[in-house]
Image 1 (cartoon, each protein chain N blue to C red):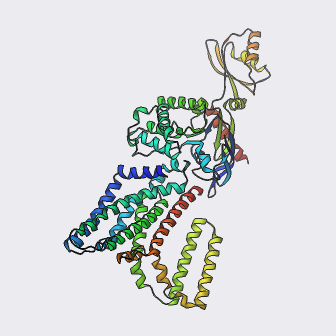
Image 2 (image 1 turned 90 degrees about the vertical axis):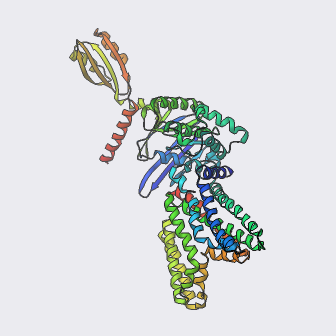
Image 3 (image 1 turned 120 degrees about the vertical axis):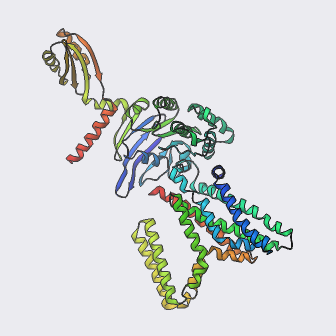
Length: 287
Length: 316
């Protein structure tokens, strides 16, 4: 695993991607830092990190798009997968390498509140809670980006797809506001989601029976709940959609709250997408 | 030792590998002789654990590739069709990386890498970026990678493709020297290559095994068309009569006549008729200018086998 980690990290810095990523990131943070903190004179560093969301979701795919797709395309994956290393370790090594890039950025950002501290009173716990949350959110997004990179061998597709998925999660807190709240709409929305899951099941397992049975059982449960206890659907859609809103969770850090649930949430996302990446690679071998 | 049994790889309705079974003994050099797109790389990829089979098992030195992948993969070095090299690394960095992922101990790594570079004659290129290497040197780097960790089994998928003639000879020599203490599977669609370095040949067409035989047995088996090239000083008709009088001779073709010297092709079934031909000529006092037994080349055998298979299919 260490070998893959070192190799990946080295390739980020020999191919310039690493430098470009770090530089761009620091430019983005630097611009906001200058305009909010230095020019406008706000003492809150958290304003900076809370504001760069959109640029953040553009920057992350630039490094995650190549993670698996590049090796699949150039067939160097044959070396890795026929070596005694397990796929779990290979993927972990790759993930840790890309996350190290992000941590370098985070480490540099850690100095910014100290700079501000030279000019006045800074709420350090708030600033660092924010940076901590930022590092966690980055970890989750990078894992998602890696997973998307494993589903295709075209880096551009991986980048665009990642950006779209990130954008949806970014806009989720706005989408949630326009979702209808009545029980019937909730039932319809959940049924559609159920159908989508069934389609995914079918395309990945190629087994129509499993997909149909799954969809049928879930649909029956949804309908029974709708008939017997419709109050279950109160706010259920919002709750459900908020699950996909990575930025919503990050906002709590902006208030200086380190919510244990959010920490677990981000870490489970990392684990989930690491697991899905491993499964995608394993599945490709069976096709 | 590699044991492949009942291997099937199915892509939809298409069988890339169709119930393939064979064994490679320790120290043996097995040649895969396969037309393009007949399931060669698929088979090799399954043996090395890159992809999984639909059915069947592969056992490497007693370790199943699916159940104990780590142990099985430790015994193998693999050079795929496209050498899996990283263009942004130097040759030495690359080989060190391969040594690391293959779990070569730190203290052995330097020697192992040096040895691999020496055997493939790339020591002078060790600090070059692979990006800047020619196809031939990339190929050698790939072969060096397969040798790292001194695995018992080395699997090479078309190792000489894209090399110039002198490099081809070098690579063949390298394979021969590796063959002394390694089990090797080698694939190629060039027949001379297989007959030059392999003990045994496996011919596959459309995922099915057609032949699994030693090179010698194979040409012998195909000797149904053993041909004797004969040069005599005699009258064509008389010579023909004389040769056909030998029981084993099936047919005689007169190829050319020149100044009383005739060239003949004598076809016989399964047996070597040189002695009888000599005695017959001696009895009739016919001078022999030349005589040689022509065994079928792998190329001819290959074409014939494929043609036979097609014919059988049509009849069926």
